[in-house]
Length: 250
Image 1 (tube, rainbow, N blue to C red):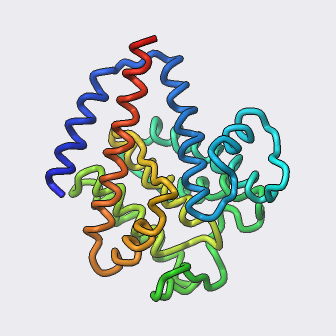
Image 2: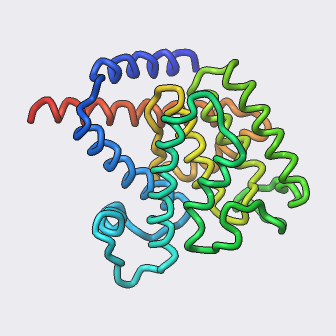
């Protein structure tokens, strides 16, 4: 773990050498990752839109024939939550509140179910593929308040990548919303990374079995989950550097 975190810090130094980044290039990179994160995060949860179709929906506002309307709503909602994530990263460097988390969910989910968007669940839910029960709905409000306190403490103790992975894990094991918890967990993780000066981490759909298995194991030992997230941060860093180098050749 120490080796990969050191490698991540070295790659981050390389990324930082490109700063200050031209505003036009920065906007291009942001839009590139808006599509990438929206596609991958939704695909991990079974959304049928391809990356190209996600780009068309977000950039052209065109619906894709034969694809469920819900899949389009998830793409547009995630894009809006992505923008809010960046806004929060600029405005609040060292904290995350319940209000922030609820807003991420509201933006993602309001087209799908406005009554549930941004509101903690009032029914029991189950995590697919998990043998462990999730907290009862009446336990959720207190658990979320405790989560915010724990995050404030962990931020001071952990490497930013470890902190982001733990924020994801702790949130998703509460599963506070009726749906969309995985998407919000990854947005929360990436908000944490951005707040600490790191780039976002993209988890490609091909990693879904490893990702789900790591979350399940993290209930008893979170090392494999932190390691997986660290790998995803590192790979996305390499992609950032690739984009910078491509821009230099233009």
